[in-house]
Image (cartoon, rainbow, N blue to C red):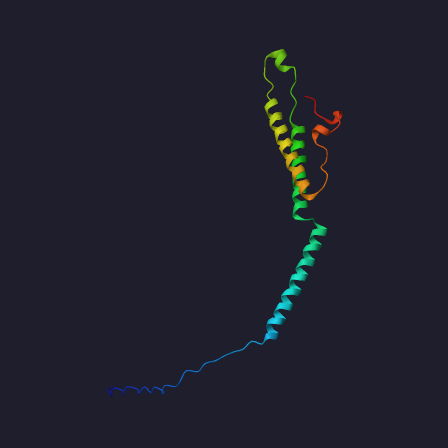
Length: 142
C-alpha cells in the first residue's frame, strides 16, 4: 500500500492591521443610581438594627444580662456548697473541709457581682442589691 507523502499545508498569515482601541463610558447617572441604592440599603440596615435592639437589646444590655446570669450562677453555687459544722474544729480538732470551697465560691460571687455592677453602669441601670445589702434572714450563716 504505498502512496506518496501528502504535501505540507500552506500557512497564510493575514496582513497586520492597526490595533483597535475600545472605549466605554459610564454615564454619571449610573453612579448616582448606585449612590441612591447604597443609601437605601444603609437606611434599611439601620432600621433592621434598631428593630433588633428594641426586641433583643443593645450589645451593652446583652452583656449586662449575661453578667447578671453569672452572678446568679455564682450565688447558686455558693448556696449549694455543703455547710460544715462551725464548731467542728473546736470539738474534734478536724478542719472543716468545706471552708476553702465556700471561700472560693464567695470570692467568685463577689467578682461576678462587681462585673454585673460595671455592666449595669455602662447600660445606665441601677444594680440589684448585692449579698451584703440583702436582708439578714436571706444571708448564709457563717
